[in-house]
Structures are given as structure tokens and as C-alpha cells.
Image (cartoon, rainbow, N blue to C red; front, side, top):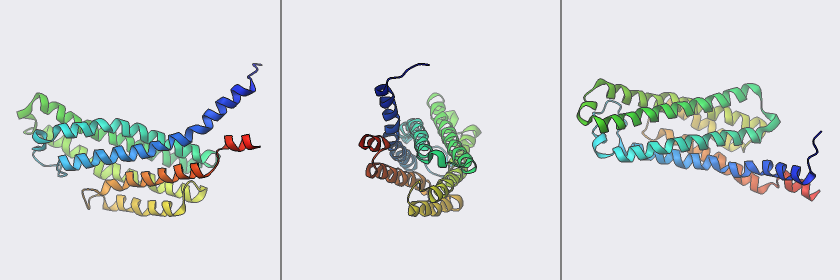
Length: 231
């Protein structure tokens, strides 16, 4: 049997217990990055998937910058999901955990695919300026990117919000009013994703609200490390 000094075990445990407090900021980072991406895309390219592609001449650099923020937003979202699971601990239910984790990963995959399709159009346009917008491949890629984000990803994000809100109500993961607010926003995403150009912003705004609550709750409550030291 290998003997581990008490001080070394305490330092490892303390480092582990402090991680969620810092990692909770990941939700805020995700929200800010995704909102920045969505605003830049909405201001640079028309929402209509069948538009002729005039934005490639005037706003491709701004769109390219926005698309390069997407991977960092995705990484931050993974950290946010990890924070929620860490906060649940042993209260995590298998059914809700499966839907929660599955919808989060599926949303992330759709976000990356849509960004890759839009980025491919910009790359091809740089090599074949005249031919791209006149081809059916551009129309297909543009429509696919639109459909993935505004139809499928929006509804999967709604499922993620419903599942997370349900978990929050039954486990105390977050305040009940945040959970009920999440239900309302999720219904809006599920059935009203095509009503306005800015509908999808409700998802990062809700994640921002959830992350802010978790950070505030962590600051209000003493950590288990501090409680052990006090004893």
C-alpha cells in the first residue's frame, strides 16, 4: 500500500473542490461569445437562405471572424455542462441525465456543422469568386446552414433548457423562477424559432442567467474545504 501524506491529499482535494467555482464562469464566456457570433452574423448576412450571396463581397471578413469564435464558444459550453453535472453530484437521475447530456452534445454538434458550412462558402468564394454564388452548391450549403441553426439546433436547445429546468426544480440546481423562465423560453424556441431574426439569442441569455446564479450561489455558500477547515 502506498502512503500519501495528509498535506498532499488535502491539497489535491482542495484543488478539486475549488474547480467548480472557477469553471462556472464558462457559462458566461459561452453566452458572451455566442451572442457576439449571432449578432455579427445577423448584421452581416441576410437571414434569407435563398439570397444571392451579396454579403460575400461586403461582409465576409466579419462573418469569418464570427465563425472563428464558434469553437471557443463550444469549448466553454462543454465546461458549462460539466459545471451543471458537478453541481448535481449524486442527485443526477439517469433518465434526465441522458436527455440533458445528449441534447447538449447534439446542440454543440449542430452548431459546429452549421459554422463549418458557412465557413466553407467563404473559403470557396475566396478561390472562385465568380463561380460560387452562381452554383447550386452555394444555395444548398446556405440553406443547410440556415436549417440546422434555426430549425434543428434551436429546438434541441429548447429540449436542453426544458431538461435542465426540470432538474433544477427537483434538485435545487438553481432557483425555481429561473427554471420556470427557462420553460417559457424553451417553448418560444420550440414553436417560435422563425418569428424574428433574433429568436436564438434567448438560449445564450438563459445560460448567462443560469451561470450568474450559480456563481452568486457559490460565493454566498462556504465551500466544503472551508467548512472542513472550520471544523
